[in-house]
Length: 322
Image (cartoon, rainbow, N blue to C red; front, side, top):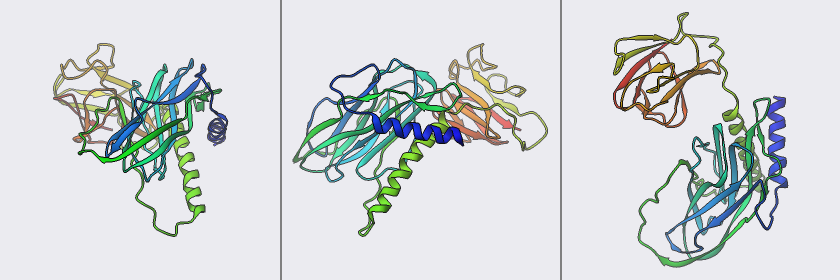
């Protein structure tokens, strides 16, 4: 609990002291836009950029907008292994958080953030706060020190002319939905809005802390049976074979370096990983096509229960048992 408290205080302190500078420094974050003139119904794309000499494992941002002029839709990060962490949104602030289990080099685009124009107006998009996160020596998430905010404001001019409905904008990288909440009912008090904003900030920090916390390989306290967890291969390479998971984590893929090798053309070199965390078994997708009971698991983790049917690629199929 002390570590969580220290991390939260450090994140708040970092978000509070970063300021605007004329040029990007060694550790800096700034906003850019390709154009600033739009028509009603068009999609505005702004880019969150960063330069850092430190390998990072996550980042957060808050972009303030006028809900009468703009509606946020989503953000996407092109950084390999960086996954979006959904947070409840407040009207007028697009709040984004991303995290990665492995350190990443940053020198360019952190994320692209999209808004839809709602009507004629002149307005600004303002980068209210942003931070880069690392895992410290104790294994906990911590903010990168000394990060400054460069260009924070994007001025937009939105014409009243309405364009025809646009096709979906192509998105590359990990997608994070930023759908705003429904309009507040009349009479909602200012203190309640403030309380929600505070909970939103602390929620984002806590989610990143949980995501970057090292995985434990401790055996479950309450396993469903005294036997070792096993994979019953039902289809594909090694069909009919039972594989005991004597040591976790284990990696599954086509590469011979994996603990479990599946020589299947639709299985990638390192396809998935099985590990134990918080007294449960988990399956993590590492970039291939991974399904549990027919539901896709994409670049994230899902709990494995005894009897779950897992498919990797097109045809590699096994049943998990514990």
